[in-house]
Length: 114
Image 1: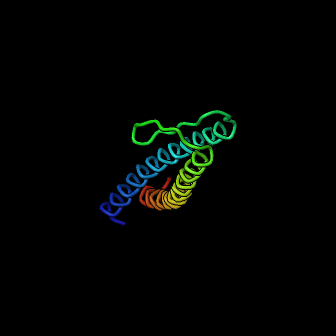
Image 2: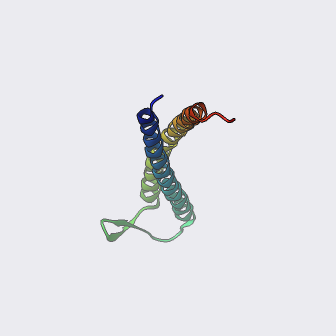
Image 3: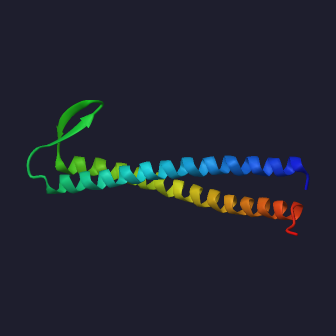
């Protein structure tokens, strides 16, 4: 394999590592949002008084049913996005592992241990 091909594989590997890092950050952010929504839902379930919701920076009174509905819809969206990110991350991690093995094999081939 030529030096140019090895450099190309190495460049692909670096890009893939950056993608993995970005996906990991996004997964963490969506996981955090999901946990916050779970906590919000628990608080709404416990609530016995008035419930307020913010819409576009304005706080309005809302019903417990409506607040629960809105939170569950947000949770569904966040969980769907988290699921998609997890799949993307797993696929990228698998590709990264394969690419790393290819690069290591080429390096060993070019620099055999004496």
